[in-house]
Image (tube, rainbow, N blue to C red):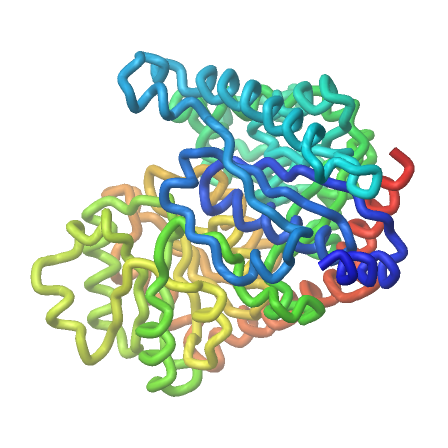
Length: 478
């Protein structure tokens, strides 16, 4: 393994540094930070992905992690949930509990690494990349002689909204019919904003986390999971305000993009167990472009009424469908639904989404417009039908706005104002539009353009690859 590391150093021209990458313990944050870790490891750096004990209980480690050998490891630190589970009362303020526990456990991990046999001059622990919603990690790093940088597992457009809100440029609350007009962004109506900005009282904890984004002007790097040509105007605008933003995405396994990392065929850390064999066997039996794939991520929750509307739509439309319904959500399905759709559809509790999206049988993706799902669809050239769930929208409305109106890669499902959710007829109309050869041509063509640009960004010498190379080179000067 030491010989492999030496060979990697010779190939990249970089000496090894040890980097900690600290992720919030949910799938949508772990995946992109893990992919960034793999890219750093592939360039000869030693990387430890750190997340918390909350994720360790269900996390499954796969081959795409172990194939990097000692250059990529996973560590778990306390997040305080142990005390909360024991009924200590510490859960009254989850934000303070998370901050207090991870401050101590992260400091302990750094100390242990520095005191270990691995902490030689060849592998100096130099840097902490931390999830932006845990900004206190930067103070921990600096107290231990390290530097750090925030990592945004969301779109740059959403990150820019947070920043402009904190700076006072974005005046809230917005009024109906009076869109926000902000530099480098399309006009944004009230329902285009992230949920915790459109309704400041709805998610006080998330707003509190967002509002604790400190000293962004003091860091030398701010990593975004986007790529330059996808969000060039937003990135340029943020840079013009003195923010050292760097696009390092799309953060999708290499074999679905540039194919430079042969073992990177999957993320490799799964909180839910995918039903891969059943999905692939079923898709293999279907014709090209004949399947509607529907999934709403690991956190979004549709209401029972929304589930029933989508179930009716999929049952009555003229296409096959593959629908991911998590085990905790299956009770919302209509009675006897699973028995009635055996010839036409397949319902699974989880799947390997990239493999599904890459399959020739999939014609469109009905999605909640989470950022990871959006990047995956764009990277694989799959047109989208955006069905943003209520009320768990988070940053999804803003991403949905961009995918439809700026990137032209999806059709947006309109919410029926009387009932507060999208009805079966509206969903069906949008699916037919995308699946139709003529009507859906514009959306499909736009999706294919973004697919090529996404690959281009990650190729050797591409914009995101250059940014990662620049960061690795800068580590040698610390």
